Length: 257
Image 1 (tube, rainbow, N blue to C red):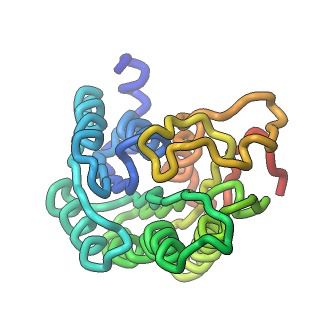
Image 2 (image 1 turned 90 degrees about the vertical axis):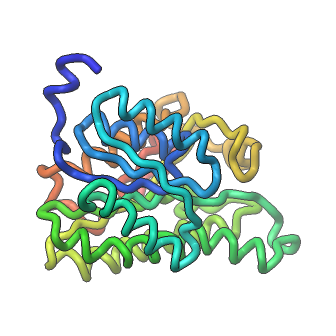
């Protein structure tokens, strides 16, 4: 880390928990918040090796990190992930709900079990993690929740009824939590990425999403995970405390609300 980067540690002394943080957008968010000085709890469902690789990058850059495995769709796991973060890193100031499943299937071929799995991780997980985190965020002077949504929640897409419903639900959850927590000093926002270049080799689909074949950006390129992470980092900063209940679209102009 360069001297200039070390001087720009605007989140120094804070603790962030990021779900789905072992690769792609989650990894970029973890590295960006760590660069800003935050201690990081890296949450992954099962891939300890990938999560530990991210932890090593964070520690090499000068910030503390811990790896926690758990299923955010399970109430007991969500509570444990938050309590372990607080016990290991000394508190919790920032929660980033990034964990998601993005499989594709025609609606008539979509089993209820598949529907429930996607809703469980993406939407139920964000609710359970937020609920568990709230008591700790309330004791922070800069408590922050950032949910990670998705472009198709606003544009629609083929073969994504479960994914779109879950991500659209995150938009509603964000607004509801902002109403409840804003007067108590906690901001809640959503970052909605779209058309981001990610490595899908280890994702739930392993394939390029169908809608990527037809959706175009105004800037003529795909975005990067680091550009999504920059939006999350902004919302976690002290000078973003007047921003809550909002959706920040990071999609190169593919969707204009």
